[in-house]
Image 1: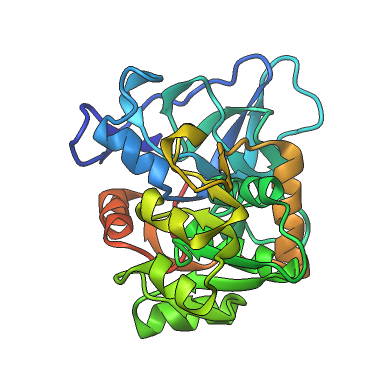
Image 2: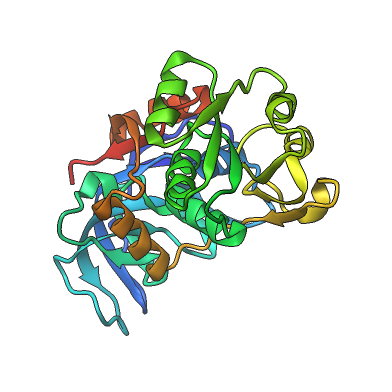
Amino acid sequence: MKALTQTAFGTDPEPTDLPLPEPGPGEVRVRVQAASVNGFDLAVAAGYLDGVLEHRFPLVLGKDFAGAVDAVGPDVTGYTVGDPVFGVVNKAHLGEGSFAEYVTVPLSGLAHIPDGLDTATAGALGLAGTAALDALDAATVRPGETVLVAGATGGVGSLVVQYAAAAGATVIATAHTDAERALVTGLGAAETVDYTQDVAAGVRAARPDGVDVVFHLAGDPATLAQAVASTGRFLSTLLQSPDQVDADGATVIAVTANPTTATLERLAQGQLDGTARVTVEHTYPLEAGAEALAHFRRGTLGKIALTTTA
């Protein structure tokens, strides 16, 4: 099979021929048709998780995937060959990722693609969508509250904006360019604040007491924490521990995305009923994976997707 691999940290991934992987107990093999880039992939590629998680070289990047079940390992129930599926590669080690024509995945982090949801969209949902829902669940956003979404134009943020607006909150989204402002307001943001300026000061100018909830998905947490009310909640997908930021009495929650079948099913339903739809800015073929990663590093309006020809 073709796969996008690295032989060392910090190098550009290249298309490589690898043996077809075999599913182990409790695993299925998926013929990948679509995938997408996440910040996690860039962290892995740069070696930031070296010593934290086991890495296996040649290292195949990629967490998100969508396609069809191609083979079923022992002890698997609920999935058969040909089933359309999507999810997140949820293994204890890194290196057997989804930027490939085939990937083996455990049943945790796997779900069926429901009728009406296209494969390309499903391939961009998994990790960013899970992070968005897990952050929203932890925040318990209530109708009438005001929330700030920092990193609103990214894959996670664009979904958080939509889900928070659907929950009845007034959403302030970070944006700088006209295109970014158009994106986030189209997704449901009532206001924008320029992330190249002092975001907290901009928020406090109109709301001296601060906002009820801050979603920290990008930017400096210490600065952004100044925007939250002392009785509010500060949610971050980038912190390892709540102790890493002082929010002046506000509750700080470090969010770790936990892709489960139930969460993936909720994401799929959100796409189908229009509650929160994924935004894909550009799609690259698998062999242009290095270009896709470079595009992601420059900043995005939503997701950067990959497709295969398997």
